[in-house]
Image (cartoon, rainbow, N blue to C red; front, side, top):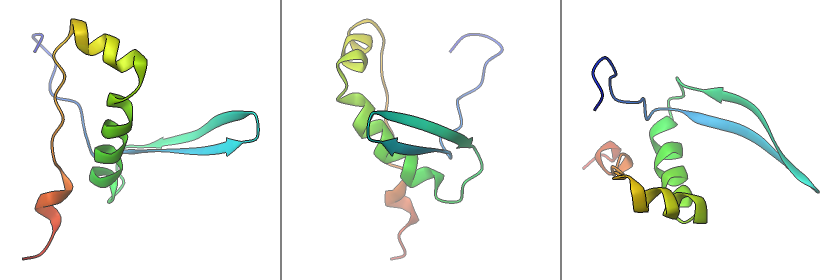
Length: 73
């Protein structure tokens, strides 16, 4: 990790509207209580995008199972 930078927050969500001809983003919520679940699902979706697959050829990518630790035993 570059000096002076910490890890990115993974507790967040992006609110969007899927319209007939476009996708519009309304806001980014970095403090969402359900952020871990949203982030985990989004990371799975993003990993399958052609752009992300190309990025992964050049850079190391990590995903973390965030929601598994939230379930009561």
